[in-house]
Image (cartoon, rainbow over all chains, first blue to last red; front, top):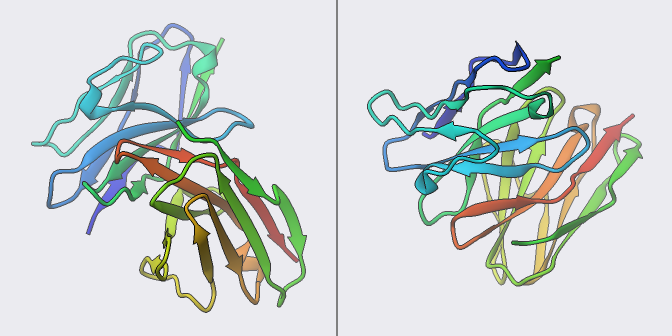
Length: 109
Length: 113
């Protein structure tokens, strides 16, 4: 069965420090991996997806199939990055998403 | 993109009663999804609402507890039946376009007392 694991419930860093939010997954097929973000009082929204290989708001994430990981990174955290971050896995052609438990990122001034 | 509207945004209900949550999308979509987010936990998929057929439920969720309707390609309802305090959660409607990205409603915050 598919599973997404985010080991950290809370991550606190100072502004300007590097950030890495960990995500590991288990799935026997070829999943599509995503990072979703939820800012305070806003709805859940897409941050980035692995197939796009893009950088959004300075964040990047590389899919490592050997380690079954999809960690989210940013070299210099900003206060506005404070939010809940969810790693998600989508099954190809099924449109369903399975989410990790989320990591709350707190960027201190 | 897709814009999703959910009603109600929040409600406080007595145990033993039922609540129906509505989800409206601004475009036609094949599948709509219902998630539950219990306090301090992640989103858990409840079921997939298919237009023209019965909903498909995930393990641990049953139709008697969470009946779903999907009368057309832009609308769905989720009913939380015979509620107990353990049903207190945020319920989210979601759609996925072209198997690329999921869009979410603002959620319905349900408190059962």
